[in-house]
Image 1 (cartoon, one colour):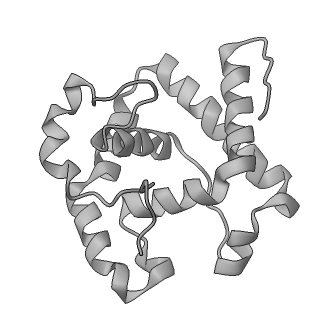
Image 2 (image 1 turned 120 degrees about the vertical axis):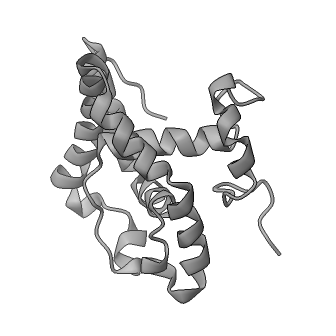
Length: 158
């Protein structure tokens, strides 16, 4: 577990992005592909139905719209986190996860939109640290929650 000490919130978010990428970049990349409806790039034809469903739900479209209207202070904070993720990708290519090499892919730069879409994805699943229920603003997503694939099933299939 990393311990981060920072002089500012921006520095903290940058460091958190770097550390998270160091520990979980491949997972972040897979979840981004899932949210964007791009898992068929790795899994081929069997993933097309899931990709169509995710594109129809449109969490990535929602995140793009929201990123465009974030107030400048919040946008800057989200960007600091993305900058930290991207700093890991650029400065530590030798430390990229083995899974990238095995899959024959490279990580893509992380964006504010990626962070927002990941947050929306977790809200749709009712997953918030320390809370058993989704927030009231997630009520509109209740109907789509059952259509989203579970990113972290409690029990592996089989």
